[in-house]
Image (cartoon, rainbow, N blue to C red; front, side):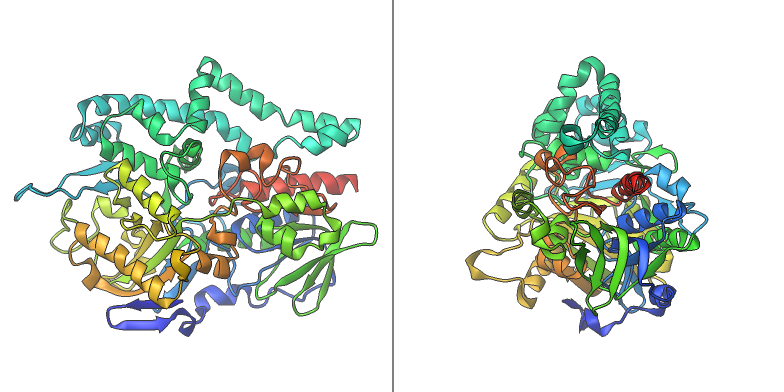
Length: 581
């Protein structure tokens, strides 16, 4: 993996984990031979699960194979002086109960809210001395309507109704996120008490139906139809439709024309921060600071967190129940339960002895859709991008649009579909979808004075390239150069501002963060891999076919994003089962 740029070409490994991020977890205490619970992986969901378990008196140890906690929610100083949210980069979906229950503000969490939050500049020729148009969206509905009216008066009038429509759907689905799905296996084969418990989990579904009422058929279409079909019913202007459609395909190997892409959009609009629905923000100190706050909450109550400790295998007793884990160094750690924050394919195909899992189950796990379109590029620059559609201030200070998710190559939904089609042919998109974020515009602690860190979340890049090519140094840099050329068209001078870059293709995301296929959600957020069927039908309630083993990461309900719900829900399921033991 190279970090390269104008005048700089060094490997990332040349820069070790800095002391400011490393020291906190170097001495977590002596490793005990036995705990009540072991958590595999210190990603944010694993940390949330550990924090809840420990608060309830369950002695818990977390083992993380990397030198730093957080999984994909991590801050790393890839380039000296520049602190990057190396994988995930925005906060909105974290469940409000987790903020409160784990006292995350007390443990140092600070968030910079973004308003406005979305900026889509146009590439327009023939405008003479007039700057190209752009679309800037935020919390001020009247200002949003003025922005949209540049492209369509009709759309400007429709936008508040669309927002209200989507917010109602989000409020209906919201309760489903905070409870495990109906345990169909318990419903089929469990005791009377287990069946009654399973039946009680239907309550959020019934509540959602009551909220949606007579409009349920229209909302069903949002969840199952291509997002282009949904947006075409509301709007006529392509810049607005394409901007909204980015949330339906971000992180997913899908086109806006793919049925079911509407749910991914909903998944990204149902969040909120500090009581503001739909708000997104940057974590002070980068996303790793969120993981640090959760870990601090867990350790304050006695949890143990170990970095540089790789779990090699889940141990199983002769009676067919989990009894702990074996670490890569040969150490055995006993426990009553094991929670895996690793992806389903890693958990069940690599860490769990296959003889203890039903063949049909492992076959389903091996067939999960884990395709990823994402290449994440982290960039250090010596000045802010200067967009033709919104020129910089004379002294170069950040302007409102710099704090936004900046959408490039997103003027038309056809561009998004064409980028997807390129990847289906086994090649990186010729005009990639680019979501550009500048967290240092609100958090200057991330970069030296006058400099900035830029997150480029780009797609579509296939895991396997056509023609026998592989993602080697040459291919990585060729793709990054293509992305930079696209940005240069919108913001001339960008390439000259680059000090260094860190390029993470799907195979790199898999290797570094343990994401099979490079999929940031641990598996596609498609309708056939959600709720009752996440990760598989009959095993969607965090429990697994092997008693004592639980899934607590994004591969479990309710899926990906920095939400924490999977960890919290899994902890509650484990607590329920421990009581019965």
